[in-house]
Image (tube, rainbow, N blue to C red; front, side):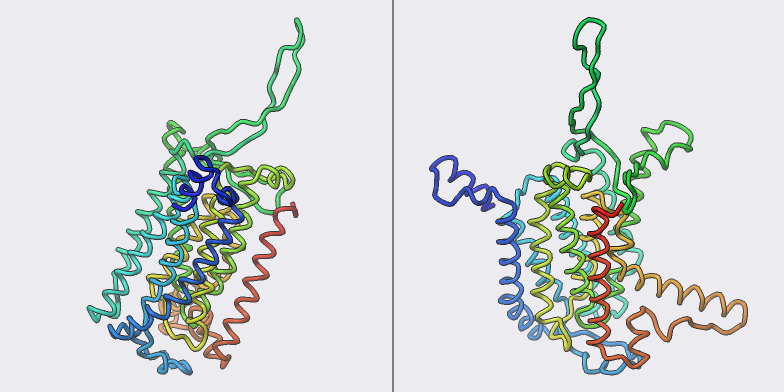
Length: 408
C-alpha cells in the first residue's frame, strides 16, 4: 500500500524521497526491518495473551531429556510469524503483482489450516488435532489454486531469446535475435549446462490431446511439491528453533534466486532464465526471513513459545510455492535438504518397522526414534547442539544451491 501511495506522491507532487520506493532493494530492507519489529515487539504481547488464554502445549511422553519441562509452553506462536509476513508485504510490495498475490494466498491458506489444527488440539482438547486427510485436502486445494494460476495466468511468463529470419534485400535473409515474453512450463535443472526442463517432456508418451494433459501434469506436480515440503517443515518442527532457523536460511537463499531471476542484468550475466516481475518476491521473502529470525528470539532454546502447526505448515508451504514460482522447484531436494532428511527418516522408520513385523513377527527400527532430530536426542546430544548442527548443514546446502547459478 505504501508503494502505491508514494508512487502517487512522486508523480503528482514530486514529493522529496518518494521515488526511493521504486527500488526493490529499499522496500525489501524496509520489509525485513518491519517484520523484525513486529516479531520482537508484538511477539511478546502475543505470548502474554497466549499465557492468559492458557494456550499451552500438551507434551507426549517420548522419554526425551527435558521434555516434561516444555509442558504448558504457549503454542500457536505461528500467529506471530504470519503477522510479521503479511503486514510488511501489504505495506511495501506491489500487491497487484501476480506472484505476490500467490504468496499471500498461500500464507493465509496454510496458516488457516494450521490454526484450525492447533485450535482443535488446544481448545477442544483433542491431541490428534485436525484429521490428516483434511490437512492433505487443504494442501491439495492450495496446489490446485497455485498450479492453476501459474499455468493459466497471462501474467506468468518467461523471457526467451529467439532467432528471427528477417528479409534484408531481395532473395537475402539475415538471422537476428530478439527477446520475447512467452507462456512456458519450463523450469531449471541444477548443475546442468543447458539447465532447462519442460513439463511437456512428461506428457510426450501420453495418449490423446497434449494440451489437456499438460495442465493436469503440471498442477499435479505443484500439489506434490506443496504437500511434501509443507509436511517436511511440520515434521522438522520438533525441537526449539530447528524449523524456524532452517526456514530462515532457506528463505534467504530463495530470495537471492528471486532477485537475480527477476533482474535482466543479473539473469543475462548468469545466463539463467529471466522471469519478469519475480524480483518483487524479494520484498515478500525479506518479510519471511525477518519473521523467522524475529520469532527465533522467543523460540530459541529454551523456547518461550512454539509455532504450532499454524506456523510450521505455512512455512513449508510458502517455501514450496515460492520455489515453484521462480522455477527452482528441482532445487528443493538440495535447498530443503534438512526437511527432506527429516521426512525420509520417518518414512524409512515406519516402512522398515512394518516390513520386519510382517516378516519376523517383531517390528525393528533403523533409528532410535524418528524424526531424525529425536534420534540424536536419544543418543544423548543436547538440544541446542542438534539444532546448531542442523543449521550448519542448512547453510552448507544453501551455499551449494547458490553455486548452481554458475556451476554447470
